[in-house]
Image 1 (cartoon, rainbow, N blue to C red):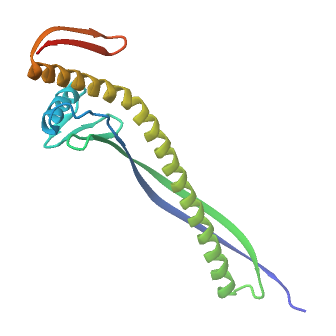
Image 2 (cartoon, rainbow, N blue to C red):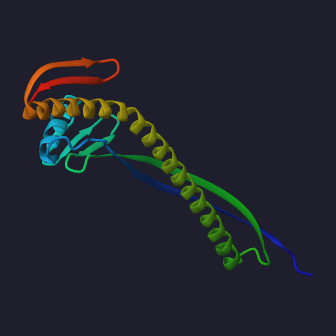
Length: 187
């Protein structure tokens, strides 16, 4: 009758995790004036929100690392962010072997422990990714109100310019609460 010997292994893993995510959404910018002019009006409004223009893109990077990119030509906003974490995991595991110095049994046990540690590290990375995605969705909802205001102001200015092209503007009345505008034009 053979005797079973207890073997023990200890493994650790250290991993630096970095995840990135981005979400894009359209801006509802009406084509009241030619696209280039609408982009100029939008860029001016976005500058008031701290976005700096670089060609056809307005950008801002917030203190928490959130990157906001507005494609002025396409009328599309993209928010991006990255997150990092250090993962340190350790595990000890006991097993059985036919001999006290069974290197093969010890290596198999060591590989099993490494696989489990890798799975745990991957699970932490997936969790960090889910948390980042949820955070970005919330940030985009918050940012959408700011961007909608900028789009509305750019649209209002475009309407005024279009009305001036049609004839002489006699009266403009704006309701700040409802966001409505009435323009009387003599043609």
